[in-house]
Length: 167
Image 1: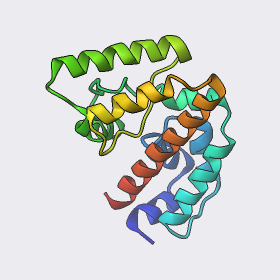
Image 2 (image 1 turned 90 degrees about the vertical axis):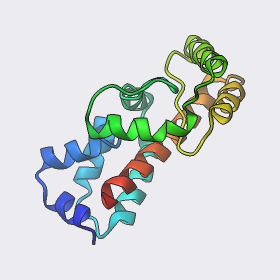
Image 3 (image 1 turned 30 degrees about the vertical axis):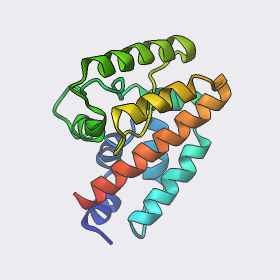
Image 4 (image 1 turned 180 degrees about the vertical axis):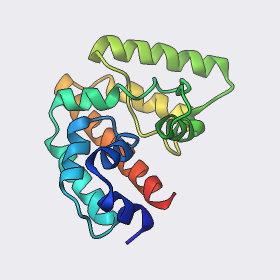
């Protein structure tokens, strides 16, 4: 068992929840993971996270998205979540003003169509790959897009749980 997992299992509910909310801003997700303690290892926590994501209602996902900046925009703040967000989006950062403008325009169009920020697990993706995904997802109907958002949020939370466990 990692040091993170030992501390997480032993923490009081408020402290354990706070550690999780840096990974995902859904209170329901964090509460479900805290309630599932103790976990035998990091993999067990991550498996429980994936199962909980499958059960979250749309308002819970909207709550989770509220902590994410628009793709291509720098996360504000000095907290763990903001630092992770900046790191995750670093590959999609570009000095090309034309690409940045296409990303801004795509974000705006997406938000008009779906009513929320475009969310993607951007780790390792170039700006062009993010734009390709944004364009492709514009063809989704609302229900399909909500499922893609659920999957992307789950990937981000899983990535952040792994970071928390190692660091």
